[in-house]
Length: 192
Ligand code: RP5
Image (cartoon, rainbow, N blue to C red):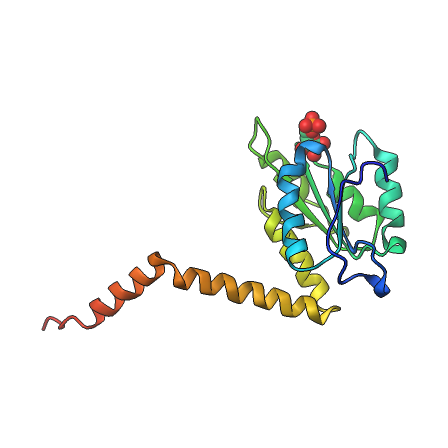
């Protein structure tokens, strides 16, 4: 695919092949600054991925081809980000049994509310798991959690990620300040 711009790490990959198992698709190259945050999470968790442009309205045939070939190519989860009247995630979901995670891309005029409603309001029968507007990190994490059931090493990395995240918050001066204030208030003599 000529627009393919990036591949992540090599593990885990389907049946030991080096190919991507998560497809990160954007309706436009202008979506990439947000989608790259999903790629970063996937890379951090060692999940092979590809980031490419597939537009529902500019390259509809390519959309169909990608969705139809994805499973055979080893793709297991698709992340799709689009803005405005964002058809990409829903159309992909309609053309494949693979789970599709939609990322509503922020827009200039409606700040992504248009994207959000276009993606989240899928009619009955064809689900798209929709994250927050611009929520690319969560899309990457959700893809990892879907894969964690099949790849124990991904499950371990997700748990390690969460543990590090929790530790980072608890170690922050703000959190320590709260705990200290709480302790101090608990030790204050109670008024009768
Ligand atoms: C959508 O239109 C894309 O997902 C993008 O968010 C939006 C604008 O695209 P460009 O005009 O920047 O290419 O298809």
